[in-house]
Image (cartoon, rainbow, N blue to C red; front, side):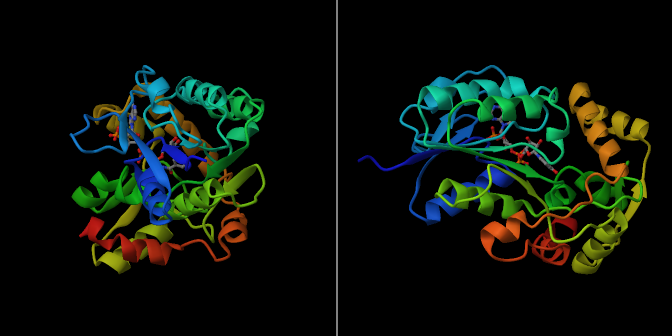
Length: 280
Ligand SMILES: NC(=O)c1ccc[n+]([C@@H]2O[C@H](COP(=O)([O-])OP(=O)(O)OC[C@H]3O[C@@H](n4cnc5c(N)ncnc54)[C@H](OP(=O)(O)O)[C@@H]3O)[C@@H](O)[C@H]2O)c1
């Protein structure tokens, strides 16, 4: 029997890169999607453009399992994910792990939820991961204001969020792809609910940089992110999620990570220590 081959969509990103590392460390064969040009010798990589579907069919050739996500920037995640789910179905994959986001199952018209429903109806063996906001947003999306002004500039109010370390998502995905038993859908959170002042204080402590949280209006967030080149419709998606966050919907803490990994999820202290170089 041929060895498994796992397709990792978004393989150079936050979740996908760590997932690839974990699977390879366990001797798994992987195929890594990228939208970038592939250098000679990078045999694990396959070029796809998820926004047009170019390369998607080829990417699935010979694949037996897959991790699917929709890259940030695309407001209609269903349009990105549906062709991937259809390919997974066509190739009769033995396991599909789809990452969406916590809360999307509250509304069946949500594009992420539509993709979940399509996967649920596909007849495939699958798991859906619905993570809460990543800690890693503080060393990626929100980094500019933190570096230039020492400020986390987001419209988050004073609500709490059970942020998750993205490395735990990768670890959960790896376990599921390796055959672990778990519920079909998992809401993934960190170990506690924190507000943005808590995060600013711990990042300051760990890095020695002086960082504070400054709430901004949705309008100010919109104009900053559109100016930075984020597509306007995706900025609206982010603002809608911030609306849920401010209402307290992102605060619940689940035990899914611990149930599957047998340990507590990484906490803020661990994240801030491991990523402190980002803010120095
Ligand atoms: N951040 C959060 O707090 C949060 C919370 C819950 C859910 N999520 C979900 O998590 C997902 C993002 O995961 P992530 O942070 O691991 O992603 P990421 O770091 O942004 O990585 C996504 C990768 O996709 C690739 N990509 C971008 N555009 C592409 C295209 N047109 N065609 C093919 N590949 C493309 C890029 O790699 P190349 O440059 O190599 O192409 C990029 O590295 C999103 O669906 C988001 O909704 C995020």
